[in-house]
Image 1 (cartoon, rainbow, N blue to C red):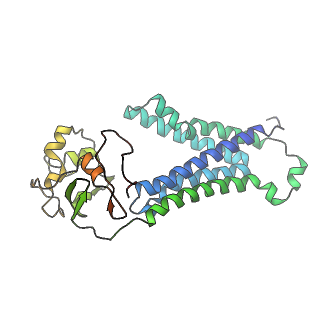
Image 2 (tube, rainbow, N blue to C red):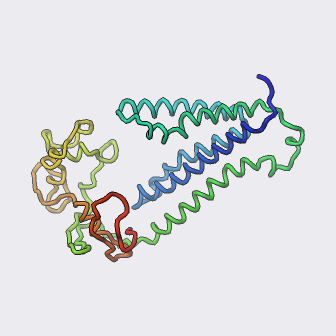
Image 3 (cartoon, rainbow, N blue to C red):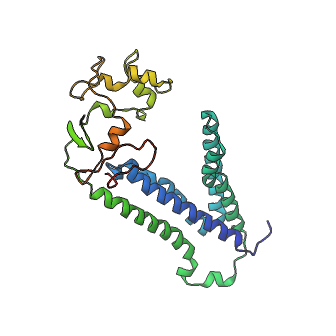
Length: 287
């Protein structure tokens, strides 16, 4: 291949990878504290995409041909995985396609740009500069995502470490906004299947013969099925055991009951549900 003098392909690839790494880092830290609001560090695997992205960037800066080839390969594999899942699940839309573009087809383009950079003629000056200038892009590729992750983690971590928690996980009476409810304690109502969190179908069809979760993950459940067979009807009076008998003692809260029961610093900050999705009119953002 003909030797190239322009730095533009390499610079474009570097900027795009830096942007992707930064976005993955922000997303990973945010999701770690969002999904793992109760124990965020058990969800540290959300940082894996960021670590992979930063690692590929560093390798590509040091060894453009090798790193670029790895990025191309990663982009191709991930593109096949993502788009095949979309097609199989019937969820292939323009918005879904565009949302995955940065880590699929764009990833392949970035890899190609790094490979082109690998064929660029290096000027003598570039081989003789001081180490911190020589590796300035590598330092930036690591430092900026690290700063973003630290900043996002500091904000989210402050809320987590200052959350009121008395450690009690049993049955509790909650006095909310113009409502008082008894909430079940930690028990079988939080059950997880061998595949992780229970699906809607498993929860909704628990009481349908044969009673239990097995074989129901992929079975379609309607709202009528949920009202008739949902697992919460089968919780015993202490909410400590899922049974094969209908107790009808516990149920899921309504959205309005949830918003009215929100707390912050052990004080009720709940409000009536405004009938819309998204942020509610809480006195303060709840824990």
